Image (tube, rainbow, N blue to C red; front, side, top):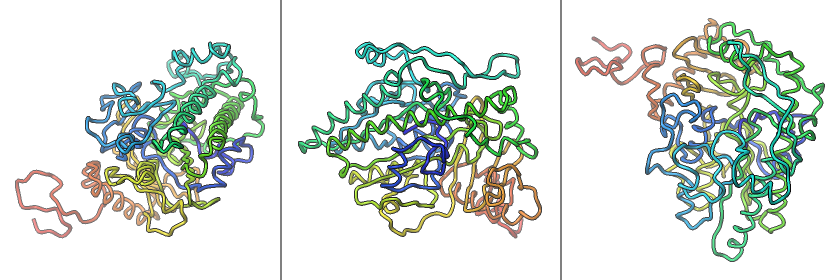
Length: 492
């Protein structure tokens, strides 16, 4: 698993300049999902959804600790988690790398083995990492060539990238892969002896910004080979004003376009570094004789803008750049080189893991197993997907419905958005108010409303009174003071 990972950084997803042979190989030997979405484009809520199999509105861990605006920071006591289910079924369960699914509760509290590595970025002062450097006579963390813009208040912008003065073997990414291999070897011994099967997650902190890389990867990709996203032409006309504010916060317009090209090139280099470390783990899996018996997932928590829509990071804008992510799955008995176009979710990993372990996936209530798809079966699947957002830096509720052609985003604070992804794949033109899209708008509002009601996501209450959602079967005022049912055509 990676963090803040764009789908277009991988060769398997069409990037001709990508240096990702390991992940591309995984796609060739398994299933690549072309419409894999995060339930929400923010780290902690997305990771809590993977842990529980619940949509964010249900588990209610809705913001990162570092920018929390008053939401829960840990899943409630007694909440179902897949790791506790696996542990209870006799599995070894390990997590090496980023946790970031809670604040007070660490990964070990749920039954994960592995070093405690809290926080959102590489914890380069972590005791275990420093021990690793010392034991291997490797130099400490040191950076230069910082890239950042200027904030609206005149202060220095967030660090976006820097050159790392360490060899690859000293990088945090190499350290994580090393610790993963060590744990894998231990688990392999117990698996081969018939004692215990295992689940093991390697969760990189990158390619989340800032992109801090040694020379070999900082300069791996020639910026001249980078084609800038077309959405750099974003004007924010007809868009929620918060997007322009976020652009200023991420200082895009204070940096020349050649810096943006370099940032994207370094980001691709970061993905290449991670791919190399995944390769080390995959070779260990093969060396230990476990390849044929082991399911392998690759995904991330959400995407990254890297200049798209004049933005960096993620935030209150439900564009494909941060909601559509890579998702690859190879399972024993699955098809090789398959591409599936169903709308699936990071949430669906939870039920898939449980089914692979022979456990009941039902407690992962918002999750559906991907095994039938990975095995090439034709099964009925939803023609659309719903995503949600609750805020980062400040509360900001959004709901999104994406189908084959269109995307609807409901923004209660300002203007709603509707994009025709066939004619406008870069999501530059908001056609929500266009007269010719009225039928599409009404259809999608009604469908989003229905899904939210079925789930129990109370965001639908806002939609009931504000939009054309069709006939409803309850009193939206919730007053209980008269017999009105608010049905279309009802007599008052």
